[in-house]
Every structure is written in structure tokens, then in C-alpha cells.
Amino acid sequence: MTMSSGLADRVVSGIKDQILSGDLAPGAKLPSESDLVATYGVSRTVAREAITRLRAEGLVETFQGRGSFVLAVPAPSPFALESSAIRTQHDVLDMVDFRLGVECEAAALAARELDEETARSIEEAREALATAHPDEAVEADFAFHRAVAAATGNRFYLDLMDSLGPMMIMLPRTQLSETYSHVDALHVERVQREHDNIAEAILAGDADTARAAMRVHLGSTRRRLQQG
Image 1 (spheres, one colour):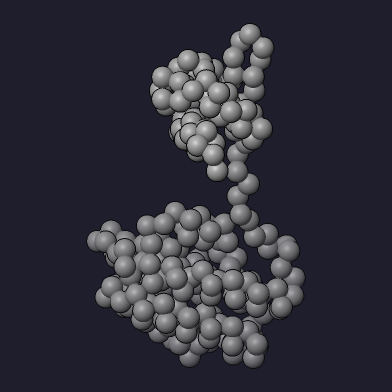
Image 2 (tube, one colour):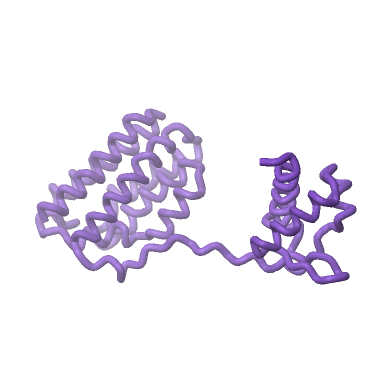
């Protein structure tokens, strides 16, 4: 990388930050070359290179004699899992495997980042799951996993849980036999114990045990699916 390219990177990064923060809204005029030179301490050549890069990325448009203006930044495409796309038991198993890769680390991070508010949320979610009516079990189960994701303090975990929604609980249940029904007392007690183990490890701030407890829970879910 040349020195001028490195300087241009700094200008591009600075303008992007202003665009993404809303300081430079769609339709706003970018600072002039002279202003960029003064603000970033670069040459006019570097300022022009930065504008050229922003234009190539579709973030700005330049009009002869008028300057450069911010274009509307496209909204990011959210991750989404459409239940209609999950048709087979293999699909459901794949979803559980995906959750294993995400939620085990979420549980560990939640244990490390726990504070009073998120600890209270996890405890409340655990109690709600323990006392939930069978018709409310799916929502209560999801609320517990969502509380764990929220406790990480990392919005991406929470965004992912919200994208998956309660269907991440409902879909596996549709593949289970009556032995693993939410009205089967032994099964309900076993699943509640799995959730209790996750909650207790997180509330104790034990990241390794929290990770392992989540793996046991989701691994048991996968095994029940294979048997059911």
C-alpha cells in the first residue's frame, strides 16, 4: 500500500463514519476538497482519490460544478430463517447444529458479561419456563434462550435470536414423538433441568460450564430428534 492510499483510506473511513452515523444524511453535500484537505491534513490528490473510492462504492455521486452528494444508503438485508424453507427432519437437524455453533458461545459470553439486569431476566425466564402451561411452553422456551442472548451484551446474538423467533423451538417439536411431547411429565422435567443447568452456570459466572450446559441441552435435543 502506498502512502497516498493509506491517507485516502483515512479520509474514506472518516466520511463513511459520518454517513453511517447520520451526520451526512442522504442528499447532503460532502465537504469540498479544500475542507477535506484542511480536516484530514492530506493533499488534494488524496482527497480526490477518497471521493473516487466512495463513488465506486455507491455511497456518493459527483455532479460537475456542484460537488459530491451522499446517496441513500441501502438498508442492510437482515438475516432471516423462513420456516417454509425447513421441510424435512434433515433441515431441522441442520438448524439445531447451527444453534449449537451459536448458542454455546452465547452462553459462555453471557456468563462473562452478566450484570444485575440480565441476571434478573434469565432468572425470570427460567421461572416462567418452569411454570408455563403446555400451550405457552414454546414461547417460554424461546424467551429463555433469548434472555441468554441478551445477556451477552452483543447485539448480533440478540438479532439472530429475534430472526429465528419461536419457530426455532416449534420446528424441532413437530419432529418429535409423543415420548418427547411437552405434555409428557418426564420429558418436561428433563428439559427443565437442562435449562436450569444453563441458568445456574451463567448466574454463577462460569463460562466453561455454561458453554457445556448449553451443548448438553442442544445435543440432547438433537439426539431426541434422531430417536423421534
